[in-house]
Image 1 (cartoon, rainbow, N blue to C red):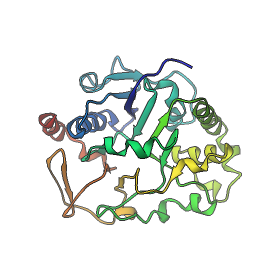
Image 2: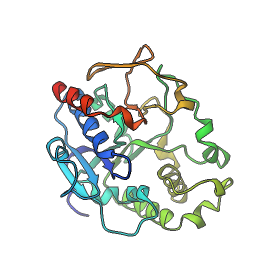
Image 3: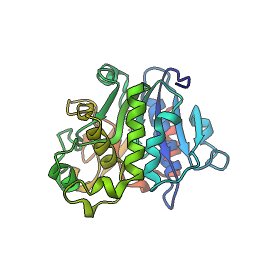
Length: 267
């Protein structure tokens, strides 16, 4: 096994017509502003030599995506264990804000070598109704993977898992056809991870305990939302409720240069 050290946070920001790099800068700043202990953060981009310059200021590791044939950009998730510099990795989506200290979650994360979020919550911190987005998962009784936040330790078993995840992506049409409603779905990280876990008998890695979880800002999970205020890094108020969990805001337009400048003052 290659040398991996310590624990750190990890995300992908593979720009398309969407500026994920801008979201990632905001995410990193929100992490640094709210964690009680020093942290390390890594990011994978299309090309570290041409990416947004302030990524190098706010991330400890800026990594270029591997050169390989992929089904789509989500396929790179299968390379996470090879790409991460950490022995223990907390993977998060780049379009998130973190208003809370996650170090107190470590005990829950470390109960297993792979701990994947199995449910999401709304702005009031109630379990979100995700049926509209999870028909394929529920129809096939698959583990309800949310790859937006999970913990993984570098182990031989997890090397096998990511190898299987890569195989599922590479053979998507054959794999998806094993299940009901297959014709509706293009390759996606959540579904590919779910199928790979089933193939290896690792369904128990998807947990429905109170932690980990995050606020999933899709309309049918949280309802209508319009009003939000950020008064400091620890205080994000949406529809009158102060958020206590990571916020997957989803609408990339929220990540503005003005908000990035604001968060730079919090760090």
